[in-house]
Length: 301
Ligand code: PLP
Image (cartoon, rainbow, N blue to C red; front, side, top):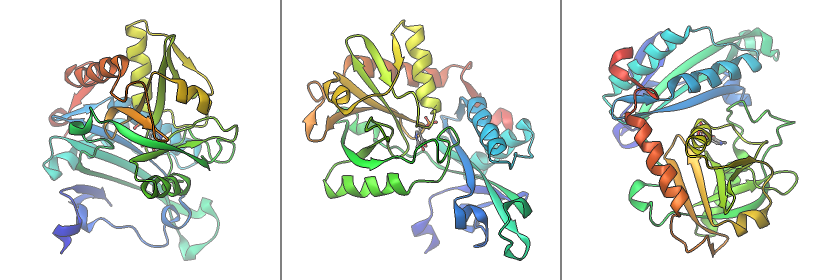
């Protein structure tokens, strides 16, 4: 039965590696009852972590901002993450590190009284857009649902406040499309469930400057654009600008660079992945075999 539900995977909890099917948290954990948690996800491709230190930097920053600093040293954290991948027996993996507020004694309503919990796990690599569907690309809608504003929940802290995104996913499925882009309080585009958005026009790349998670893949695109002297503008993107773009793509650790070829039933450009998207997609995957950007799982365990 368990085998039908759980993927191949391994978790680290309470000081030991366990099968993913055995990993569970107490119901009274603030992380579960209040979404009082932060996390990060790094991927492993052909046995190599990609930009592991950048993910750990963001995780450490997030845990600090939420006043539950991660107590692990960087090298110990790396060892645990690599251990999860090794125990799971995976070459390509999605590796998540989580810090929850934990449980407070006698269910006290004071978050300062809770004992923080750290969990990590590795499962097979997951794709928002399957690589064999690259040419088809993603077909999305722009929803009227507003992403939680950064003044309410700091979007730089990777979090599980996903009810807006999940409502948007249902809206997308009801419209028979793959996914959704939410808007911000100014009716500019923000992000989608697990991905940032880039638009391309004749003058270069555009991506929202605020109200979104500062994705590590988004940063990688900014780095690659600099290398090839492609101008990038970080600024609010109106729905009109999105609709006028000659190319649009999504970026995520869960799949990399993914062309968006249809928005609200209208083709983007000619409805095929564009030149810039293809070039960045290729460069992004080329970085995965470049030791400047990767760390081997085997060297870390
Ligand atoms: N935006 C949101 C809301 C996310 O949850 C994610 C990743 O899960 C992203 C953007 C993309 O971030 P990254 O490139 O670091 O995976």
